[in-house]
Image 1 (tube, rainbow, N blue to C red):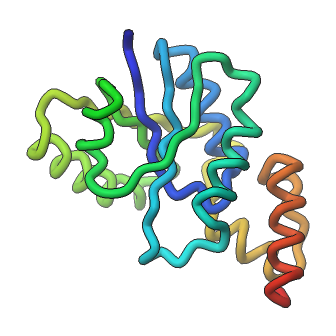
Image 2: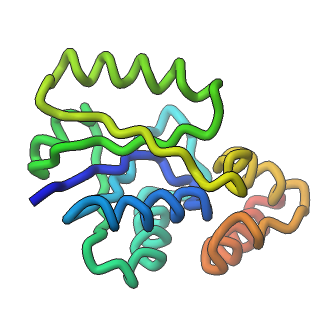
Amino acid sequence: MRTAIYPGSFDPLTNGHLDLIQRASKLFDQVIVAIAKNESKQPLFTLDERLGMVAQNIKSLPNVSADTFEGLLVSYVESRKGQAILRGLRAVSDFEFEFQLFLMNRKLEERIETIFMMPKDTYTFLSSPIVKEIARLGGDVSAFVPPQVCAALTRKLAKKGG
């Protein structure tokens, strides 16, 4: 079975993430959306909230599941018997950082491949930090995130006072 791991913070999940997940589900037998516990990023949503948002939005994809992890990504990929790490590249500016991660992961575990996927052109500008900033400033993010995520953002920011 060919298993790909799509890691990220998904804080929050965007339509760009979903685009990659849906496309990857056609290429691999199994796709695991692996939500990283990375408190240094100071996420808006808790790990459980992010897991719930992802799980809710992938339930129509039978070969896709959601999970959480902490620690080294390559260790997680090995524990799930994955063959590939999926990474999205929106722009040339993403490439340098992603290439460094790829080289380090390859050094740590040569067997695991990294697959770079480009988003649809309508999502090349989209990122979770941009979505959060637009929402914080009162903008409409409904075109950028699934409806459940839009509602969760509204609730979360109302609690925090914007």
